[in-house]
Length: 585
Image (cartoon, rainbow, N blue to C red; front, top):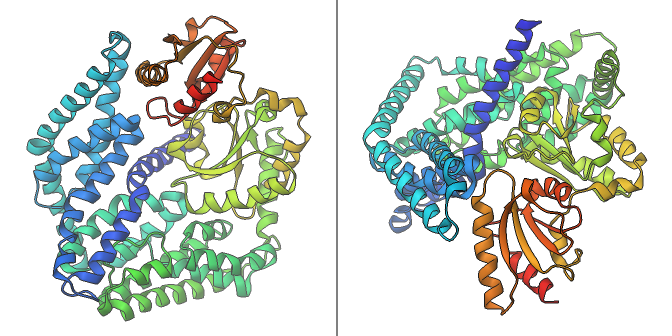
């Protein structure tokens, strides 16, 4: 039992690391696509050679893309301030090396965010009133300056050497014709939700390096190849049973054209022998890619046939299509044998999922809906689908449940999010796949969780809607306020002073107070504005209390008689003008 727990913990740690790496790349895929399109069209070997426009290629590769990654990495750790310091720090490794610094940016971005976060934690409460902006600006500038110097002289050369070493290793594997063996590890890892970590955290940085020199890279195709997944779904379409057979054709469209590979993962997991099918298809496809000289100019994300062909250079069109076709054929053939030789009656995908979930729930004395923190179910005011990257499968699942919620007459918002972006909101119902539950629960321990096996076809959704519909109507009174109160729902008439309340970090509240003071002064309004810790709030009926969304509940509990205005961003809120207008009324 202990060994199982340790194994689960290790997998969660690996997934978390991979999620952090891919989380820095995924939001910036548009930048990579733009670079790939410019490269494909305008370089000397492109479709429409243009020397002037081709001059965009090198600066985007050297500066823009690494800085976007560093900015995102810093933001993940400590918001806007972390993003700025992470970008400054990344310039040191970028300028201090001769290779594109994607790996260096992945290191320096989060490091910069972490350093400025530690500074803020240590000093924010000690800053004298009126000096907040001065200290904040100089601290981020000086810490970024120091990290840029360290990156230039220490980290950049090390990363450059490691990059050359990894590139040499990949080149050796290619020269030894062993690259197809990589899919023995890549395909199972994808189905264990490490697909984004492998593709965007490892293969994309190395592929960009190769593409910059050779004009294309086979590494972009190793994980993105839709062939093996297509073969699995075709086999279920022709030889499957029940819901698995009926849902597979729709899944083909989502997987092959939409590029959302997660759609076929449950089909493989319901018959573990199918791991052999995707492994065989991946190896065969990569062997074909290598044999024919396939490659892409840039990462194809999502792994759609449309995105792949858009990134395909003219001399690799046949090779790329051949590798995808071979991977599909081999995967289909192996999957066909496995499915046809399995004479068990429980081939219904939805039935398997429902039976499995019910059995687990009953063994723990739970209801059919497998939830944690169930006593909070009545306080739900939002539903969030959480997956590794916050795109693909979670977006599709959110769409399915959003339609059911709407038809049930419920007004709950249904959205999707990356696990790394989850907030610990006790009023959120978070739907996640069982493989990812451990990581999600660490990010939001106070939320209510529902675990499902398959985002697209879960019988749990109807049960969720029924549970929510049965809750008493007064449950909505316990929902925290949103930015809607700024638009006039809250009663501003009794407020004669404004309080910016904070829980742990004072800096944002100070900045927000400074902004609002100036706006009030410019409008000739005399409202005192102060900054107070939530634990020190007095219950005043004439106070207008402004807090960060995540801290509003605590503030309401401390000062229930006050008027509360939660904002998503205290520092850069566009809502302050509305606050001023409502106070004037």
